Structures are given as structure tokens and as C-alpha cells.
Length: 240
Image: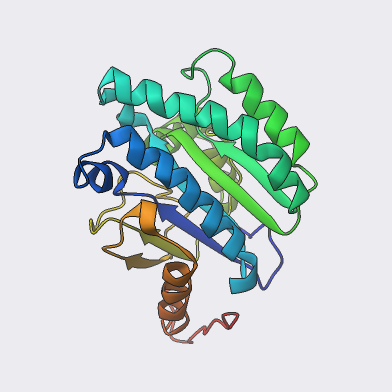
């Protein structure tokens, strides 16, 4: 799989964890943490291009998150609708292309149409490709792609395209995968695309995550010795 960004631009993916815990530790409803998390999305996306990141994929709502209390799920869907309505023009103005990755058939009425409109309005963005995963499951995508294969032959590249396509995505190899909030697991996120990703875990809760945290993760990433199963090192130059 080849990156869709410029050859020197990296693909960073983030599991945005800790919104609810951040809120409850302050005596606030969990949805307040998710609202603050939207501000962290804006800060992080704005910082990406200057740090050499051309594609940013964010894990906003997993397929398993439907199991959460109905009021929290409803609040998250309202936040998604608000984000699409309020952020699209700013994204287009800053050269950011927005894509929403994941199933769309289970989203509340009106949101799939809003997604299509936001993607169309930002399609010319070249400074950053911002991908937000909603109702996403990497395992479900792999299973669906395997069923489509039906015994036929496939290369890693062609099968990767099928896996990504099952969730309205594109096969972009992940270079750096970050998880906030102190947990250390992948939670069914980009399992195929992150096969050789460098992993970075931070205790910082997502609502407090910002440019300095992203820069620290990129500094850590630059120090990694990436060999992709071989012996030759592949060092990455990170923007200062």
C-alpha cells in the first residue's frame, strides 16, 4: 500500500482516548469531555503539516461503541453532526481534505448526507488529509474483504484496497499510531494498515492533547529504527 500524501509526508493515526475519564474526574458529564475532544481535533490537525504529517486518521467512534448508554451515543452523534456543519468551511479554507471512514448505514438520518457534502466541499484540500473513523471496525472490514475474495487470488496491495474500501477508506499505510489516555491496546483500529506502524502511548487525556504532545510523539518516532522485517534501517526526518 502506498501513501496518498506526498512522499515525505507521514500518516499518523490516533486513538482519541480519555474524553469520558477527563470529564468525570472534574465532576462533569462524559459528553463534556467529548465536546472538549473536538477542540483537541482542531489543535492537532492544525499542527500536523508543520510536523511533516500529511494524513491524520482519528478514531472517533468504533463499531463496539454502540453498546454505550443511549444518551452518550446520541450526544456523540449530535457532536458529529455539529462538527460536519461547523467545521467544513474552515477545513476547506485551510486546505484540509476531510474523509469519514466507517459504516454509514447505521448512522442517524441526515448524517450520511452531511458526510458526503463535507467530503465534496473539501476534496481539493492538499495540505492535510483528515480522516475520521466513525462506526469503524478493522476486523469487520477484513472479514468483509475476505468474503468478497471468494477463493480468488489477491496481492497484499489489492486485498488492502478491498479492506479499506469496505469502510469507505483508502489503503494508506500508517507510520505512527498514537493512543492517548494511558491505555495500551489497539482496540480494533486500522489493524491491516498499521502492520508496521510505530506505536506511541501517552497518559495525556485526549481533551488536553495538543501540538506539544504531537511533537513529542514525532520526536519519539524519529528515533525509532524502522526495518520492516529486514536488516536495513529506515530513519525518518521529522520537521523541526
